[in-house]
Amino acid sequence: MSRLDDISLEELQELREQTEGEIPRERVLAAIGRKQGDELDRLAERHGVVEKTIRNWLDRFAREPIEQAPYDDYRPGRPSKLDEEQREQLFEQLQQPPTELGYEQQAWSSTLLIDHVKDEYDVEYSKGHARKLMSKAELSYRTARPRNHEADPGKEAEFQETVEKNGQN
Image (cartoon, rainbow, N blue to C red; front, side, top):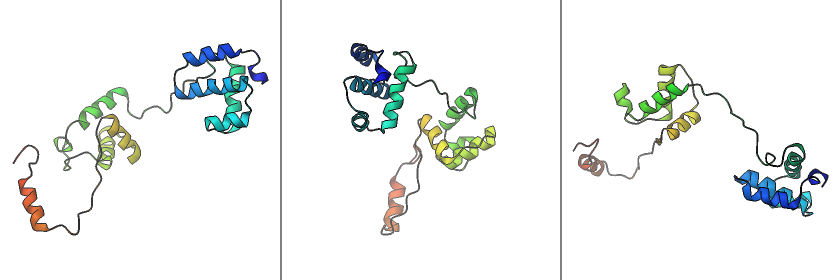
């Protein structure tokens, strides 16, 4: 328990009330549990992590000021392949049907988005990232659905004639 010798239980409880976020709160609760005498294996089970993670959490309280110990350092991640202006332009383009940009498809797909970004910005994305971009642009992506083999082609044709498409009868 030497990691927490310089911190009182009252300080930890006060920190718990001020802590924002699920993971930082878990770290403070683990420190409180340890200060109250809980063993590492019990804390690990309670918080759903391995003992090494509990030790790492507690080490933070020995290394860092108590206010910073529960929180991770800022990690910006990989820089975007598109700059902010290009990204905004892409999101504006995604609000239009692909036909208005010269494509034959009626709706955006991840494959079409990949091709569009490659042509317009000379940037390559994976299908997964294309789906993330579509989600950030508040679009959903469609997947192909197989045709029901039991469907009556005559009834389907009749149905298609009665359905309004693109605001037209």
